[in-house]
Length: 184
Image 1 (spheres, helix red, strand yellow):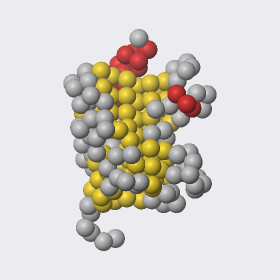
Image 2 (cartoon, helix red, strand yellow):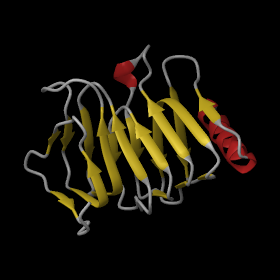
Image 3 (cartoon, one colour):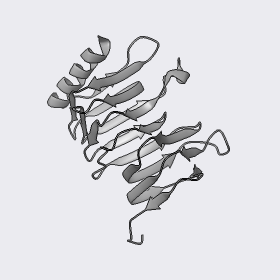
Image 4 (cartoon, helix red, strand yellow):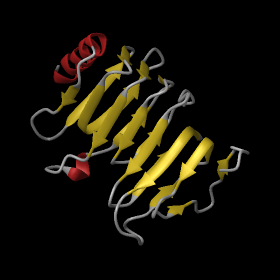
């Protein structure tokens, strides 16, 4: 019941241009919607401590604002991050800051002019069953080494820019394609 109320609150905040912060009692908060629409206007910030899960072929998550998905410090093992499932549509030109993993099990992530910042001090995955297509992909965090790198378990395309900063991106046997032909 809480997840549905939270979805309604996010939509209400999006329509009024107010920032929304999703945090519920333990174990963690989840912005979950199934066959619904979440629209985040350019003047809106949504912060989720826990998980964001999109599921259902009629689900649409449109972000022109800013979405922050952070670890739940009380229950970090419960954090799944930003998950696209079952042909849900995620689109828009907004900003995403993801602390847990990025999981793409849907063919419908339309990156538009969006900026995805994977920001974690522990190993972070770009994973799922489908190729992830990013416009701008940025990697941030502290430290290097096995337990601090970003790791691909799927193929990844980047259309505008890839910023590694001081991060290691382990591609393993997967393909990373940066398709911007302009020099900077």
